[in-house]
Amino acid sequence: MRKLGRATDVRRAMLRGLVTYLLENGRIETTVSRAKEVQAIAEKMITLGKTNDLHSKRQALAYITKEGVVKKLFDEISPKYADVKGGYTRIVKIGPRRGDAAEMAILELV
Image (tube, rainbow, N blue to C red; front, side):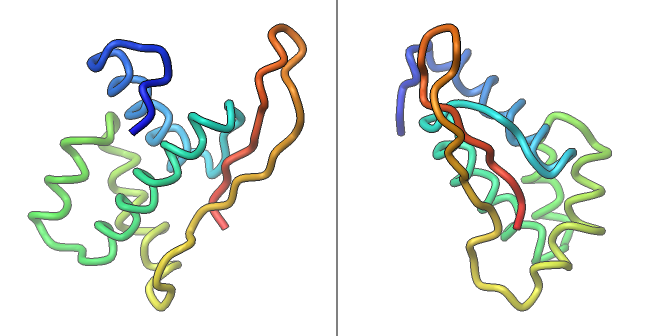
């Protein structure tokens, strides 16, 4: 796990927010290192959504910050990948950010 220059609780909250936003909108633009962390968690959430039982819904609700996004995960996103074994997301590098030259990327659901 990358530390991303943040304290544990702040980092965890940031990743939860990014995963929620990714599942809500289908794509996010962020730094490459953040995208790699979010990708791993988002793939686990989609795999969790495939089981579609009460226990997995509660596990998803414990991590994802919006109930509507959890509903979308279980009703729309996970069924789309029912026959796929992984690789639900893609990272596309888009070059350096203007302000601090941090390497930027787009993380999107495939």
